[in-house]
Image 1 (tube, rainbow, N blue to C red):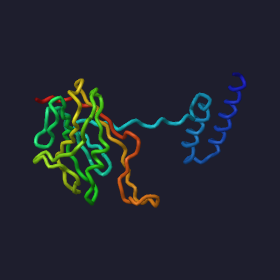
Image 2 (cartoon, rainbow, N blue to C red; image 1 turned 180 degrees about the vertical axis):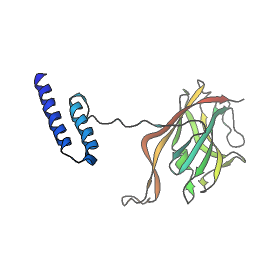
Image 3 (spheres, one colour; image 1 turned 90 degrees about the vertical axis):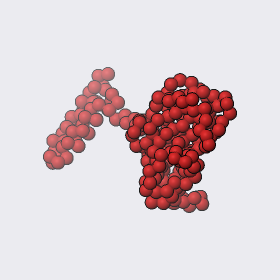
Image 4 (cartoon, rainbow, N blue to C red; image 1 turned 30 degrees about the vertical axis):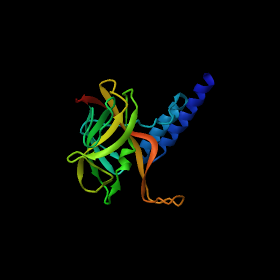
Length: 206
């Protein structure tokens, strides 16, 4: 312990001497460096932990690739006719949301449907997710830029959702401008990383 303490004082002394000899414009950075050196034996140089997922909350916009998504509510229903007609034992869980395509070209809806997931209900998703235009139950396969749509992202589950809340998560989706290894340049690519996550109360309707 004595040797470590002596070495620590020596390093700190040299750092302070270096700072004193620098111009004023460099002293702030030097002071930070001295502090880091002084605390190094106690973890001062440890890596900064990676931030967790961005929170998803009611009315708060999050990005899923090129899509700006605002979740309003999550609803469970016995069906969503004429769009979705599950078996009597199954249920439909709907993420009611507003979606805006922020780019300047049409994009496939699958970029959105494949990268939003639900957890916490203790049931299996047996079908979906599918995306429907709320006003006329049209199934969305492509989305046009510059417009805001109210959409229903639907999941058919094996039975009633267990519990009163639902966790909504979205993956990190990045734009791949060019990739010589594939035949799919200028594409949105999902990464194996949760970018956003939030918990919503489940609204049940019969």
